[in-house]
Length: 501
Ligand code: FAD
Ligand code: NAP
Image (cartoon, rainbow, N blue to C red; front, top):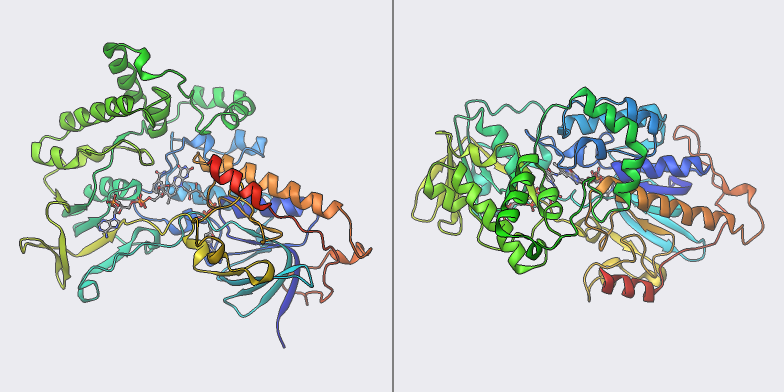
């Protein structure tokens, strides 16, 4: 017999988004379950356990704002959270709010189909179960699906190969010869960390990125006391800012400063630390004015040449394109290249030909002998988590087809026409910010929509049957919920939002 479970809401993903969505919908007295492929909660922080993993949002804002007591009492000892600390924080939130019983792990959503006649989502998962749910909330994250380049010879390598997002527990790289492919936010953190313990580290760099110091340091008690006293106001201000990173965003165009003032402002931001602060707290137009962008980029390039002793390495590490990607910060990235055990291969000059059984062969024939190859090559970001699934809305419309012409679009990164009662957290076309506050705002908006739908009343006049027992150990009720109210973005709203963003 088919294992069908009825729910008010099925939430997919047990990271920042899924955890808060669960809490909100439970508070609304709904029958909710969260599924995740992972073995436990944490999302990004469950998967990304590579050495050096750290947030680049400061600790006081890389968390939830909705539990003031917890905000004031939960310990964070440094200005940024290390990966295991974020994971422990999310586990703590789940425990504190008694949420664990509502999660089902090792369960992947594979197929979701809107059933018009029942007004329900019919969701198939990897365990063979079928969930029928009034609301489907996808909190799949931006980054779950790894990008593992298919380099010739990769299968022949006799050493170990690891992607940073699937880091094996207990892996020790002490004394090893390690190659790191990729030098984005992740690569930079891995390189700093592994350089300190490896016998040899080779960074295979395709494009150099601009990075500024993070300003990572111990939190002084008086700093924490001050944050605690002002916490509510801090959140309010952050949530009303453009990027929600908790610093004063500049309103001053670079052209309004003399060259001397400009240097001073960049230097101050460099000393204080923080990538978004450097890009958006110095001048308001670094991200879009050519001259301002060049001034910031020139400043960072000068710093790189000042830090890196070997001029050839400094040249290779210096970006030449716009300072326009997600800005990076670090705690000693450029300094790592002053170590004798750290080398750099510029793949634009010397590309990878193949992976051999003992290492990486680059153009010209040199084989870099390695014990371990680390792929810090990122993710199939933004829509990859959606396009690999079979999601069908009204009239069997495939999500991939909805996105085939103009790319991944949505209204507010949350809702799409023809996908009724399906709500995405951090779906495509969402804002570019510190993510936890954006996640919170989206979760609260989704919860309000659901509440509105619930309060619109049962169209067939039988509200009492709509609440279904979700106790995993019990036989789940076979009564289907009675509401048929649906919510979805209009095509016009989606188009307008797409034009705006
Ligand atoms: P995630 O945490 O990615 O959770 C999504 C979950 O969905 C995963 O557990 C996944 O297994 C599950 N899932 C996906 N598909 C399925 C499926 N089909 N079926 C079942 N389950 C599925 N952001 C910032 O704003 N500031 C930072 O400082 C910052 N630092 C970062 C540092 C690192 C090292 C990394 C990797 C990311 C960082 N990010 C940062 C981005 C980070 O992803 C977000 O801040 C946040 O954790 C996203 O939470 P989420 O719940 O939306 O998604
Ligand atoms: P990423 O930003 O996509 O960087 C991937 C790196 O791998 C780039 O250097 C890329 O080079 C390189 N690369 C990809 N394919 C390659 C190939 N075939 N050969 C050689 N090099 C290749 O991925 P990420 O660093 O994992 O970061 C992803 C996201 O995670 C970030 O945007 C951020 O949101 C989040 N993150 C945040 C932090 C933090 O501190 N907050 C830390 C880690 C991750 P090119 O540049 O040439 O493409």
